[in-house]
Length: 205
Figure (cartoon, rainbow, N blue to C red):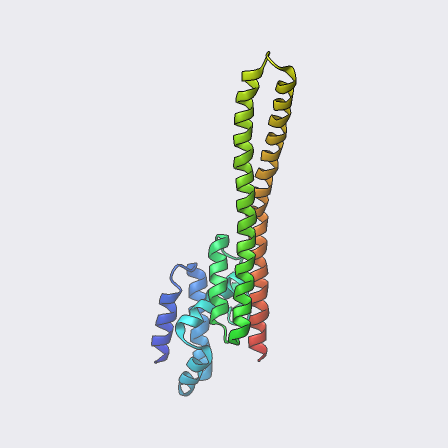
């Protein structure tokens, strides 16, 4: 594979990346090859790995703002606003592209999977609690008006249940909002931090 073929594949693999980031990444890659010299092109290709893996690493580097494969102007630029799921996917692909031992890779992927599943299960639990609270409010309101004027104690009890369920629904909504706006982004930041550590470990080695 030649330098131009390598760069062309990397360029195609980075489709969808911010045009400025893509341009900077390709310029940096060109400079990297030029500094090594024509006689060392194959050594550079061996060092960088396959163009697909290198592109995956670049995507993850952009998300996690990791040097040294990102030029300074790209590091200083605010990160593009990706969705949490897209960011996690990019980082996972970037981790898989790193030359780390298979047992360590498995442990890292399992940890990320457990984190995602845990938050998803908690989110599902609060969603079910919200649905249950809404159904309880609806049924109790119906029963409240059905028994109103017939049995005061039952009516008061149903009113108490309605207020309690309504409060539970509000708490469930707040919890769902917190998990979506804070929980998953926090998990994404943790994965980015983990990626940076693995990346720096690779650079030191």
